[in-house]
Image 1 (cartoon, one colour):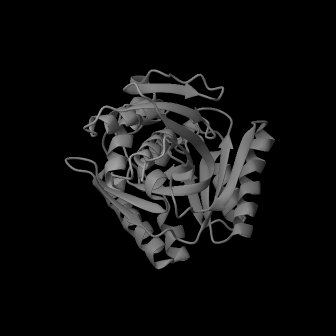
Image 2: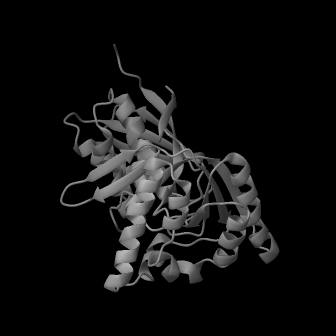
Length: 311
């Protein structure tokens, strides 16, 4: 059977860090998502088009999807060429995995055109080259859930990638995206270079507790373990309204939450849809009062990551 010549993939937004799990924990969302269409071309190499208004680079080495695809092409023995059309549904700099979505969507699409010869782990490793373009660091906490779906734990990136794809807990996510940008590189620049041992122990305990809470569906444990003692305090000054937004969302019934990725988006986990919508309204009320435009996203944790929608 001949392989298709083109494919369209929806690549979803993701929540990285998930409170205490800096650079290791991630969750997949149902929306928003990037649309990536790949078409085989006779000439080797990549041609990239952005069908949106973000004026992102189209040089493959400087484009997150292009860098991921170049890594994939290095792993393929035969000469290949792709034309790539990307429509960003996830605003760059939003903190909900915009760069990861494009990189993940591109390699998932290419893999579909190649008969799915690569594993999820191999695709994650390739897509991480896109994250290096965006932030200067090959990290997988957004890439892993964008490809695997659900809840992921990145145990190691070096010397070998070690990612665990875990069952998605039956929780709903409320996200507010205030319309200002926090660049990943800037958010990393404010992080502490050393952490007191006692504080690190508290953080490790919360990471373990959060993973256990997800796996046992213990909402009370999830709520206790979501607190981040290290990264969020360092980044809080970059996100006006963070404290009030979290406080009001929890008063509306949310289990807890925090900064999504490097921000400015804020996520809150919730036991059901009704609570998530109440939490979203609470989050939005803070930025409405501040006179800052915002977008709200409400949905369950998605069990599937980037997916083919048509050939």
